[in-house]
Length: 219
Image 1 (cartoon, rainbow, N blue to C red):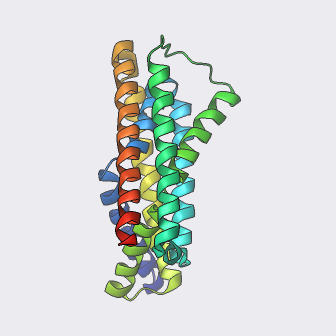
Image 2 (image 1 turned 135 degrees about the vertical axis):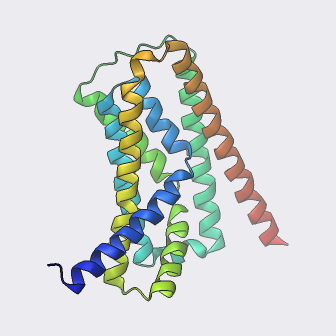
């Protein structure tokens, strides 16, 4: 029979998982980028992307729990991170659209260099949004107040939240890899264009928001 500690652990883990899945439902550029990898390249490339985004999420979750999120409450630091991450997103978007303008072959080489490229692309794309720490910090602060979590319990909750990323993204890659054979190349090119435009638009809005916040701070 399970003891009270095990039950408490599982309850906190489930709470973290449910919170993580809710966050995953708000799909963003990284989700579409990973789906694009699974369709345009291979299942393994998609999973390499999933591994990358999961690692970055766990990294940001750990920083949030350790209180690093407080640093990003500084307006000047927040502005710098906002501008840099916005530029990175726009560059990624331009690169994707440029690639979509050429001929696409689904059968891309699956050697280690290709997988490393897929991993690195998603890793740096996800890493370009350090303000995610602020989101996680807000969530963990709320949960600490609501459930009176200790720091140890907060790490369990954070593990569940990060695990949701792995499960959700992996399921998406498996699903799109299964239907890939029925997806025409033209549709993949269109998806490339959409992903590129989403990244550019998202980056542009974040850039404008960062500049607006800095100008407001100056008044």
